[in-house]
Image (tube, rainbow, N blue to C red; front, top):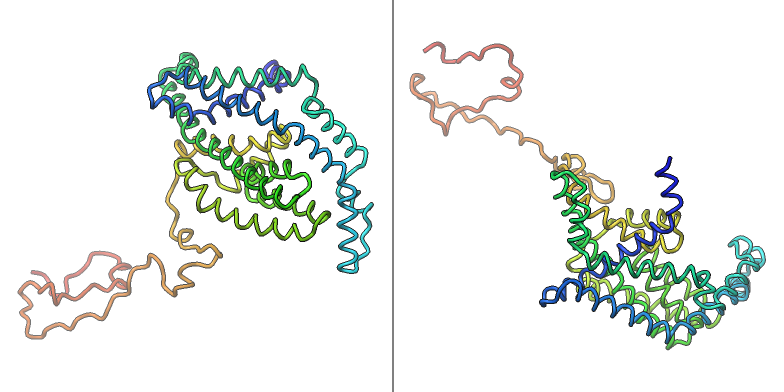
Length: 394
């Protein structure tokens, strides 16, 4: 009861620690790059952390006001966007849709939309909460990220002293797995998301799409951190905005998304993720929904990295078995391979015709192995009792 109460009270703080740990393992590949060049771990962590903070602040100074203004305009234009699309559908397909009913079905309450727009108009502090709360959360994540990343093996040693000697190697192996495999996975996803956001942002700006900056961020983040459906979400929202403004632009967005997806799959991803692990799409999607249910939008983003940690540990310590022949012979469409090829898998070949016995052969001499008659499996396999030599007793 006491432990549950403590966890409930410190839930938000534990969530911040989780974010700091994910940020620390995401920075591990960059830290190891400096370690291989002779720098100490503390100095490597300081260089990586300072670079991330400087780049983040520079992007915030350059794009923060533009991002919030465009996001506010997009939110305020939701009712008019719905009305425009409904009118286009009614005119094109001779429908009788009602914009108010569509808005109610989508749960787009005008008061909620206006409240969200007011929060965005208030800047980062208005969108995320009070100044004190935001400052505390940011400082907590930054401090613990630096501490976890800089401590590295020493942090494992501090924890391992509380475990029995036979359990200590397991803790060290789990930590190494999380840092090497999962750290590379998270870092590769962040790099690919940033590249996707940059390329989509340039294209959206070139076609003069309203709200191009937040839509580009949406396309980059959802495509990498929401598996299976993330790519479609990142493209569908800009397409809807384009349909309400310039319908022809929606076609160009779809074309660009298809081309970029091929380039990312066959050019960017192999180079960025060549040494990282992969997570089963079904498991990753379930992790997104579970993370969103527990921690909201941020939980949806960190759900896949957490699933990557669990998957890497299971891959190392989990026990796997070979498939039985029946399951191993199943094709992707559910059809058995044996049904498709007409062959029976893992079945003994039928015995051929028995060779003829030479009547001139001496029955007292050992039989020639080349002419020895094969045993009949239908009779010998099921025979009961002692076998009798047909040549009689010797």
